[in-house]
Image (cartoon, rainbow, N blue to C red; front, side):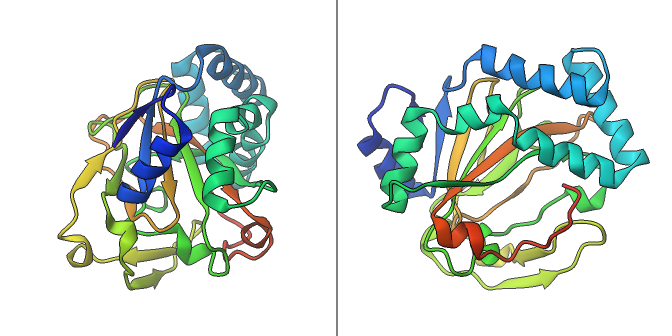
Length: 246
């Protein structure tokens, strides 16, 4: 399930095929993460510290949701986020899974999770519901301000759940992403894995892999970054709603 950066792409692919996701340890350098923080503090006009950035994000989310959404999307397009996604190891992995040298990056953004805001909580779902015409979409997910674990509601994966088709119920969310919820019963046979990550760690998972938001018991909002890899079909033919507030 877990993998070091120095393992070969072939070994990564075997784990990805078996579990539907791979946890990568110490794969993102601290300099790159600091550059992301530099952009965030500049955008938010706050002190360049983890706590100040989280506080500024929380204030913006509660006072101006459209501006907060714009901040999240803009952060997904900054140079250090793009360069992390285009690391030769991860790009080679994506090329192998997607069976193309023309890999597109889509939906890069900052994710923000605050327990008291329901639209920021995600039940069990698969990303394939939002990319109906793509054969695969790969998501890179990683923390950038603080570690993520079961205490602060890290992402939970259903190990091996990508090998089965799961019926999903469409649930509209006011000012949020429409959710395609999978029932707990449908996933009862699969082991649930908390993606406990330190800064520098990441998860890569298939759009067929069921996952959800964990319960944040810390009262402190949690933030991560995602980038998705796909082919041209997944880039131009997807079912995401045009407005969301992450």
